[in-house]
Length: 257
Ligand SMILES: Nc1ncnc2c1ncn2[C@@H]1O[C@H](COP(=O)(O)OP(=O)(O)OP(=O)(O)O)[C@@H](O)[C@H]1O
Ligand SMILES: [Mg+2]
Image (cartoon, rainbow, N blue to C red; front, side):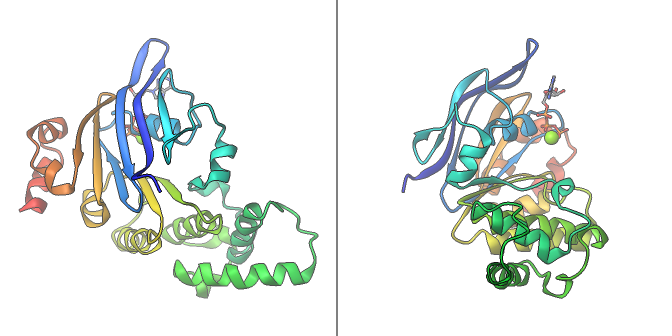
């Protein structure tokens, strides 16, 4: 396998003359949890959307295992194993937790939405679904309607549905966004646990999550890559502290100490 599973080379995105992502080079090592951070408006989501092919770059290249995937569709790269976690809105609220995971499993098998498939087939899926739900700590919620899950548990379900597709690279956009303290730590621990044997690239604002589980971090500011390294590297980088203008830099210093 290639050392870098996912690479951005000179990645650039303009919106009507405004450069949201400016010549970004980013290398994600296979097996790492790689975080993409930066102040508001830095270009994180744009970068994420470029890497997951939801946006077309103005220029630059994206490589997967050394292979150019710049021109490929989200569906094609998903088949290669680069899977973006579903938005909560994509979890079907009127289906049970188990049924949601089964839909994910069926997608991988290329039998999506074949609800009319035989019972035996569905039972095999049930076993796999149950194992996944155990992995994400939702075993006691299998028959709960997804719409009735507490917020943090919904994110765990979203991760289970993503895992059902057996991703090589799992892309998460702010997995702990909007969560309370307890959920944040549970979801961070979950990401760490399920990252074994995979690569995770996540956009994350919460610095304790970033410092707790990331192997490497890329810092964006005004569309540019400001720094890349371990949490310690970036927390000691004066440019990074300046970029955060005292908002999180104090926290960065404290945690590095
Ligand atoms: N579709 C678009 N059209 C025009 N400008 C856009 C578009 N999407 C993003 N931008 C601009 O590009 C810049 C980067 O936005 P982006 O959403 O990538 O930042 P971000 O780092 O994800 O910010 P946040 O932390 O607030 O989520 C911002 O100035 C934003 O206004
Ligand atoms: Mg964003």
